[in-house]
Amino acid sequence: MNQSGSRAERNLPAAFVPASYSEMRIRRTQILVALLGTLCGLHFSLAVENESAETFGPYTAITREAEIVRDVKIEENGRIYLLLNPDYKEKEIILKNSNFNKAGYRNWFNGEKELVSPANQGKAPNQFTDWVVTSANFVEYYMDGKLILHLAKTDALQKK
Image (cartoon, rainbow, N blue to C red; front, side, top):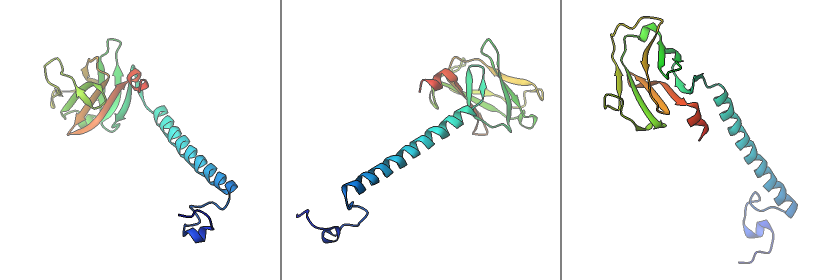
């Protein structure tokens, strides 16, 4: 195929064939600037998301349904307590723990992968309840099949 001739002779759209070397450099620069802008915007949005993340002792809340889980308290001995909205205190909570994010679930002390905090156990309203101790990097709390709290050890998040 003969590469000589104008764009029209080669039947190529003008957008794909630069008229000159300087035009080609300008287009390449425009693409590079657009790519860098996109990457910087992505990095900025991730940084803002991380800055707004709540920390509770050595844990960072990846997810917290504030309507249900009003607060989290971590004691020095590692106990994790929840402060539930009184409207939800009579609901069952299922906990999962792992060293990996939503994968590789470990057994609790009872030999099960899910630890159930039963409903109707007389939880006092506006009191920290439902305590648990784990050495896992990630702890997930579910209510009615919905993830209401997902904690991650801050150190484990920073290693990614």
